[in-house]
Image 1 (cartoon, chains in turn cyan, yellow):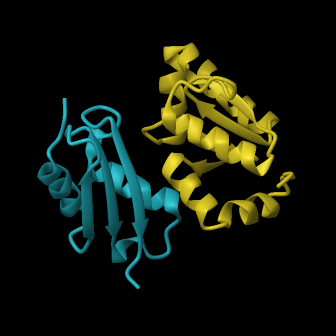
Image 2: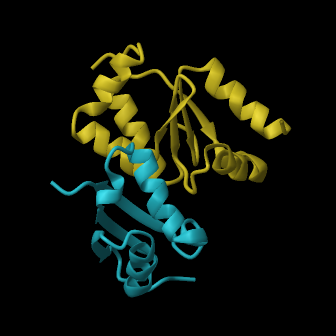
Length: 77
Length: 109
């Protein structure tokens, strides 16, 4: 089971409406993505907390519908 | 507390640096786990590798324990540091050395 880039972005956007999101499909198989997510909502949070917010946004998708999501998070500069 | 939860709690309490991974440090069975083994080895940090592929209970148990969906997972002095992305990013930015020093973990390089 895979997920399209648009589905992935939509899920993240629902949880973090202000986010700047860049997604790349690493293998072109809809199963291995890299995402860079920048959001004001990450301010004051640890990286673990930031990544958890993205994982929560994807709901059960991580490790299930999605095999791999290389994640980089940050706050707007 | 379930047996699995107390087993994991014991591992992260009794070992300063623990890597829950797929495969073993000598023979990682996943690229992400292998990457963290390389980083820890490069720094010369002594760590214990726990192979989650040895049991389905452990594989699920570590995800529940940390509320984190993926493996590998690095623990230092009982604290969850992160998975492959976070630890790699910390290493690349030079933050991992600072973090280990703050925690009083010795490393060779």
